[in-house]
Length: 397
Image (cartoon, rainbow, N blue to C red; front, side, top):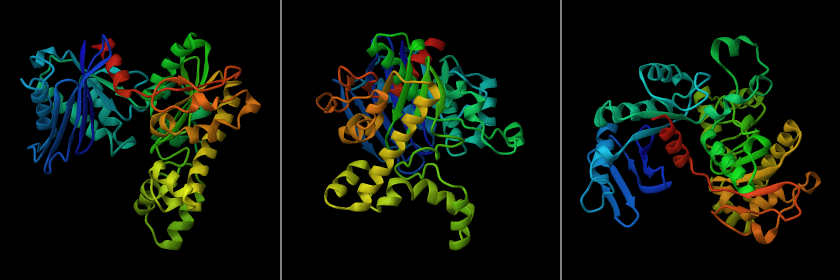
């Protein structure tokens, strides 16, 4: 089955066309600056690439049409006609408590997505726009499927998702831990079971999705039972520009002292904090590593704080599950930084974790990086959210 995977932002649209039979990426690219001056990129292995500026894309509908035109182009296209696209899978950030699995989109689903907008006001409207644009351009007969960042975490029990606030805020306003990166955590946990040659329902796993946005998830028997992100993606470990967990009383103190309103405060927490805020250098861990090696103590501190926070969560989640069989590293930092993997997992021998320094010296490919005699396996697994979306879509379409 050929599935077009769409990740729509407010002024952008990422896409991949995948063959779910052989899990091959046929083409991928990005529509940027939709509604402004339009930039379009397209890559198809063996067919060439397109990198075009000033492409007329006033709305997401024109962006979708631009993608389809490229896919069927006589020179660099990969399909003969649009009819070869069997289904479309959409990344949707927030499904609230309504969606615990991916779903085929119909009018009821669209209404439920609208109801989730207050939970993700920056993301869900863009995702909905992408769905409507595909329907307008491709017609009602092409099945569309919504795959939610939050769905995988709907198995988290109340003891882990409930905040210690007046309970009516949960009952009336749905304030609870939702978690994100669910598609990534689901994918790497399934791959971990395959790599270990064990059924996933027999494994206790800790998945560390580490990058500019980071989250750690406890997965028991294939189900998420706790995760570090919360009601929003702001919670958990310090990230590229996000603060992660902090004492809420700090907000009142800073807002009063510096005369900030809540919008300004949230801008500080989301865009000026994390490793960028601590280092004053960058939100990119590669820049921080270089700065730290050159003697920048704040850059080194920012990286150390991040690693320390991840290490604490691994210990906490092992305790919560009553043990752990394997720890997974994925996403930009998790896949590419041997130094940070060592800093995080290298001091966990007390709980049966023993890294192999030679095996750990690897980037961006699946590997078991723990020592042969390590009681807890440590795995590097590149995430593939687009493939997970495509597979879910193929199953439902």
